[in-house]
Length: 252
Length: 252
Image (tube, rainbow over all chains, first blue to last red; front, side, top):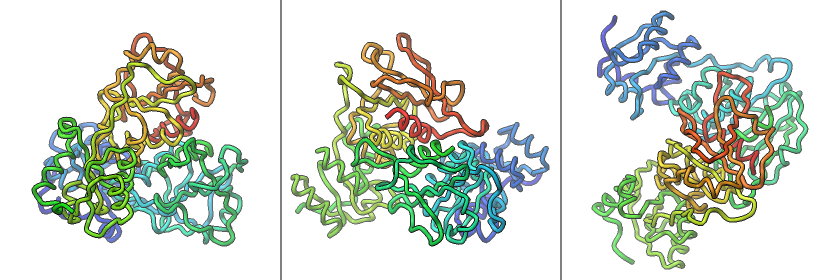
């Protein structure tokens, strides 16, 4: 057993709440029991922090995998993770290996999601969680989206961001060749086709955009169909994660 | 023009971030431009707070409706609303008149949502926003759900909580007679019927439950069908707001 987590180290680890520090160090924080468990399963965790005597099953799993467990005062854990309702469990983990798209995509039926400029980390994580549940093979994240290693995104994804292959800083325009065999659907609030009336091939990509401004322009060389979920009240609108859920359900 | 918002008054108004104070005073805070606009439209706003010279259209609309506008320093507005990213607009508003169900429900086709014990205000507001978009006629909120007048719920609802009739502290068991003509669907994570295979009457109620524990038990006298959205990966799960979006889309 090593020393328990000290104030100074907790303060240093808390810096991982910032995107820049995560990028520079290649490390992130997992701040809930399910996330720590996912991280262990994905082989990403370097050190688990638990309050003394807490979460015996998680402690055992970490030790079985050869991951050191450090005792930590719940107050320090809260300060480290920035989460008010810390469950007394956290982990220091490597960032997931990013998916590189040099070789295009696997053959056969495949569903992908492209998060163009989804700004809210809760929306981003929520959409990835839904995509995983409906069998998406990978997630593509554009340059202007929220950071998928942000604690709020990880929590909202219920760990799906640690399970699914995730490509970052994706520019769809550079993937025109690889996406040639795909039905590309771009979710728009107005003016698109009713997605229920659409014939789709077995390879599908859903493109969702920014909460306020919608998706960006279609790059040259891509053939994209705009889809709009018909609403019963024209004055209403759907949250981007709710719209993505409805569309991914139709596309699964 | 009255005096600008002072520190002491901002501090007193900030107490409306707490459910107990909202209940006791019958007042709530609206802390974004769209919410203030919705609140004005619903006739609920008693006073609008704007930074000097800010949001001229909103200022004009308030004054046209005879609602006083008070100048407010953005820092004080932030402290009052507890929102980091305050847009420099807020309002003091009456709580919406609760829907009472003594006379049952209107005749004809009708979609209702029952939020049994949805604990997260963001999920609660998000589901109400989706329900409004798919034409729900009213929202029923159970005793153990998040507070629909909480700032986070109001924001997530994009104002739908101010537009739709909302009944609170609802016990479905006491509504058995009024719900006799309804198809009642209870969303469950496992073991329910595929909702796409279900015949529904023109009067429908979707019952969604707690994020961790699902919906509560069926009261005597109600005939309820459990529905489960089939997932491609059994180990995954849907967030309650995503599940509600898929189901409300099927039920609309």
